[in-house]
View 1 (spheres, rainbow, N blue to C red):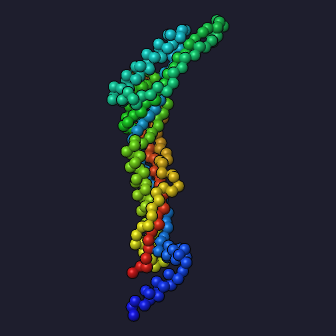
View 2 (cartoon, helix red, strand yellow; view 1 turned 90 degrees about the vertical axis):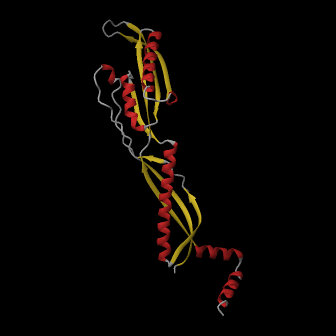
View 3 (spheres, one colour; view 1 turned 180 degrees about the vertical axis):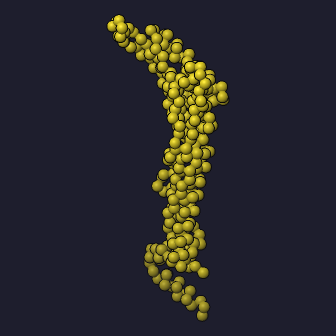
Length: 247
């Protein structure tokens, strides 16, 4: 006698068209939920750009002055173990200019030579020190700083955000299921980052760049405070849970 309801239920489902039975089963036993996750991490890589500009009456003199100073800056930066491959030339420029002497009103020719390079500081906490070294070695321009994540830190942030999103989805699923007298008994599928927005977004504050060339006067200059703020990693998930009657 205890088997009769099961047999009748089986017959009732079997009597439905295949598509109708599948739809009824899915609607009754699954619960789709979206979850959002957010974590904040401090970037571990710093970068900035240093430049030099020199003028002289001849092209060779201007180029020599700029190149000599650029080489000195690179040597100074490499001293605290910044690898050569983390210093990248970004521009080299030479121009001929004709100006009028404000006193004699005569035209004169001047040559302007400039060069710049980007510096990557693997230990972001030492970015301020690197900027001071470049300025002290004669940089006439400093642009930056900016911050980013190393590959390992980026993976850490993405995984932490996804974990937070999964926890959010599970909490919402438990609450929704309980409100209908159900409980979560398993997971049918998980879709990570369905919206494609797992990259970090900047919410950082960094100190202003120092005055370029401030170290060339021979006077002691206070260290430049460069502080990396926090950046957000966000993630979204879509989870389909299996549910069953509570109790």
